[in-house]
Length: 102
Image 1 (cartoon, rainbow, N blue to C red):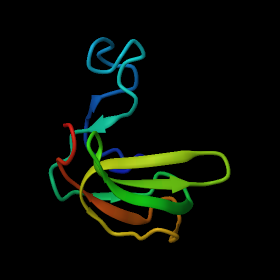
Image 2 (cartoon, rainbow, N blue to C red; image 1 turned 90 degrees about the horizontal axis):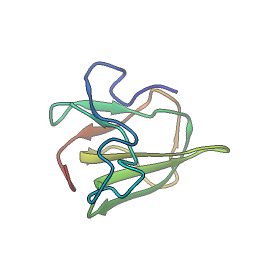
Image 3 (cartoon, rainbow, N blue to C red; image 1 turned 30 degrees about the horizontal axis):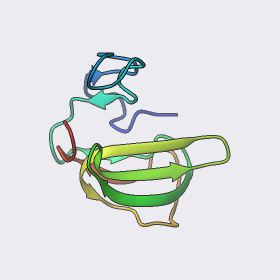
Image 4 (cartoon, one colour; image 1 turned 180 degrees about the vertical axis):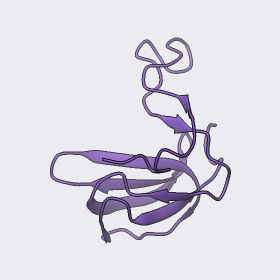
């Protein structure tokens, strides 16, 4: 598994950060990266694109499934893949953005 930014930018909020009113007792349920808008993002694992949609929380996001995992890549400015497309770990899939709740 790779990070969608290939580790080039800082993690600005990790899993479990800021528990409380906004994220509930478990805290933040993802990893936010400090990428400039328009940064190329890559598939974290190989799989099939199951969904590309706009979500009030994650903004434009991509859902990738494989036999054991589901990966979401969100807050995008542009999706470069389509539903049903097979992707390999490291394939270019999107450009970063500031959509949804950031």
